[in-house]
Length: 104
Image (tube, rainbow, N blue to C red):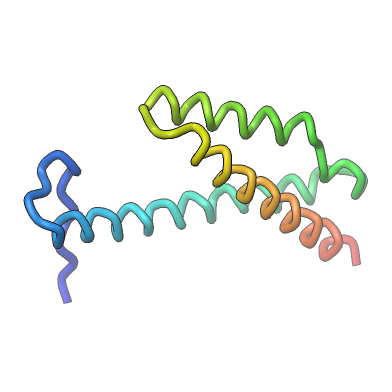
């Protein structure tokens, strides 16, 4: 089955085209998350102690940067803050798992 290419949002004329675009974007987001979690594996490998995994100052900085970026695009900052809170907490949990796994 041949995949229908996604149109730019401003060129969509039907809900089918919108859904194709959303589905394609979701696949791109998952690929980017895979890359981000690769960096979490690298961090787990590099950090010398388990205590170094959680860094509240860095967490706040990452979330604040995402909110600022979102707002510059006109995306609701509060929605991005909620998403990034979950993303960062999930990343920290994953990094803890990787840190433990790599040292057992």
